[in-house]
Length: 250
Image (tube, rainbow, N blue to C red):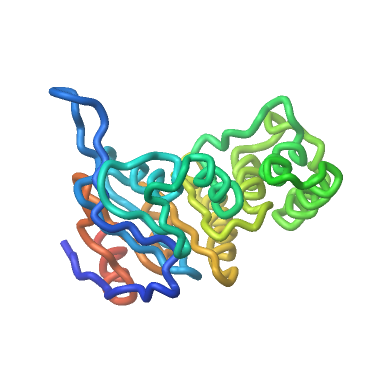
């Protein structure tokens, strides 16, 4: 197994910097350590995949990076803002402004139409409803959903629902986009279409896209790939080492 690191990311270009993070769940005999002094860095302007077996700490790592989960030890910095000891209300406000989420099960609200679903992050950030819905509709159209703006999620295919989920994650122009298994429920062609969209999103100046995945079909889209095992980073791959990793996992 290749475990060659590909060097350090300069602090001025780092989107996420995690140093020595420990996160445990439960107490006593039921205590489980999900992250064991983990270090992780993602750069601006890259699509970064995080891979590894189930239970290795991938989703926990990104939950810590996004500020949705507290940790026990270590330091977490997102675009130069250190989240340690920041009041929960400030973390929530920071996340609403700077972070977008894409979930495996889409998490769309079935009682709302597509425009209303996509508008939610803007409304939470204080944008007026009329402007929020206009921006949502324009983004849906750019993602290939023109004419479907007032449909409900249940009227769409899985791939279309994932496009709506991406639109909702992007509509407030977040600097950090986090996706949890965005292609696992999709067929090959639709999965590639979704990865094309996410790859394009990663090229926005100052943005970073981080994806947790078990899907080897996505590996070729990565600028950098972090492999996790048992709560720690087992390897970081880029360039030639990434090509070797992909070759060994197909």
